Length: 504
Image (tube, rainbow, N blue to C red; front, side):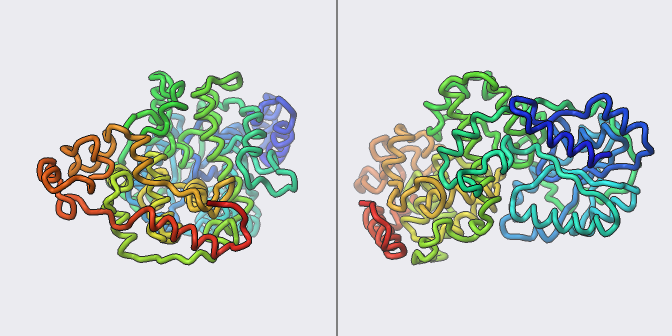
């Protein structure tokens, strides 16, 4: 019955203008309840919520439910997932999910092991006929889910996937050739016209067998760096709109010293909120003001990168623009270490990297400046920086992080020429003119005059002593000359792709 209901829901979601997901009808619920039912295992992954959760809603409407989370030690051991702050945030989010389930009579069952073994084992233990989950679009997730599907099939257990994370499914925006878009603008033009799925309430009551749980000790038990769970996400979203930041987003989004961004990225990363929930809160469907439209466009970038990675899994470790896979990198580990420590001598770069280390979060403008400096000034392979960000960011998301790094490196999607190189001094002067962001994260610069704070090495000896910031002692001298390294970077990119026309 669950499979039949899923097919009907899939068909209903294709009706133009109709709600993209809905609860089963009264007749469908009666049909489910009239039959002898066994539990359905609802397998949570990047969807730690009970509202707007089609898989949970469908399973709960058809009978008993066992809600599960699988801790995969092999996944946690990968270098991109060695992030204590993100794992602590995840653990807190799972605790919040468990509390929401318990409020409705359920609970979260945690099992440790490879999903292809742990999920079928749990399903057999509770006598489930089906496992339901939110559809995954990442290459890793799709491979994992195929393994789980095959293992379940061997035991005669069905595997049902539901959309619910992204506004757009892959087949909603196929692109002119059926393989998606390499450029954001045409993708966004179609994405922004899609109707939002209607809200799906959380199940009012959950029932199902009680089974043992391994607990969350495999995840970091330290305090999370920020509040986790759907309630915290909702509070952040409400404050972002209530305080006027959404309406002023277009003007203030690039100012790292101003608390003008939503800080919703970590909640989106783990599905504690969804794109659709954000869209509805902004006022969709309907006409958005310039600020809210600019913010909604950023949500579109997230979905664009998820679509792109799903269609082009090779970009996870390779340049999207194949010729740039041959760029000659210096890859000096000492320079990578200095950059990561925020000791390059360029204040905008250093402030960003120190914020990342302290908060597990980094303002988007600072992300771009820091990434450009590593790749174009220090000539370190963008994949090294991508890994550093994934090991530090609470919101570290493989699709968004990869897309952002390749965009900055000029190796990725969209109209991102390789010769677009951020000047860290000009970026600092433009987006942090009074140096408030710099001084917040670099205490060595707090007494430096405004006219020198972006280029402290220009102070003479007396001025350095007066500011208690002796270059080379209190704060490092620039480790490279940006103008020189820019020319080297351009030459290396040209050498990798001599047929490319354009550029300075």
